[in-house]
Length: 216
Image 1 (tube, helix red, strand yellow):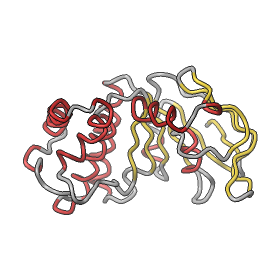
Image 2: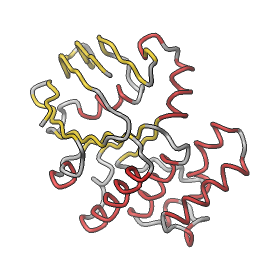
Image 3: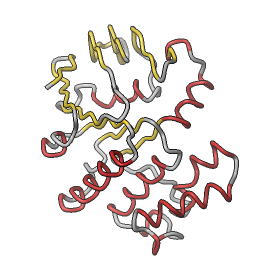
Image 4: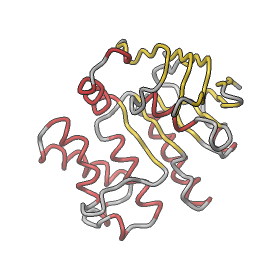
């Protein structure tokens, strides 16, 4: 649950009087114009931004009083991030990129690579397993980024315009696959999109307008 009185950036108010709850297994979409604060709000949820006034409880913990290390542990254990621009490490293979979060969590390279291989096969990337990101299509890179977000089986997935950098046909395929995977795993998902078609696939829809979060 988040109760934000004041979300700011360089002392300029971005969002005000926000009340938001994300329930286990629910899929939530957020729409709104560019610059309305959608990505900043996701960063608050993902504990990447702490410039706010109010209360934030995540998985029965009060985020406001957590140390940086405690936030890092929760983030790696319980939250998966999917970004528009993939953020894959160019020097590493797709196999290694996907395995990294589990390596950090378990400190077990072999176990991490086995888990990554399972997702690579499931996501149709077997023939690209040892390729570096620059040799994959945009759709293949996004599938790899999704697999990386899912490898630790996080309770919450946060996606920020995850198909905004892909053509429509590829976007449709990736998005439908992603939503199906989330629902099969009974994970919670919150995602930002400018596409009404994708927003309607959520269980609950919100819009950010005039610094307010409005349930549609």
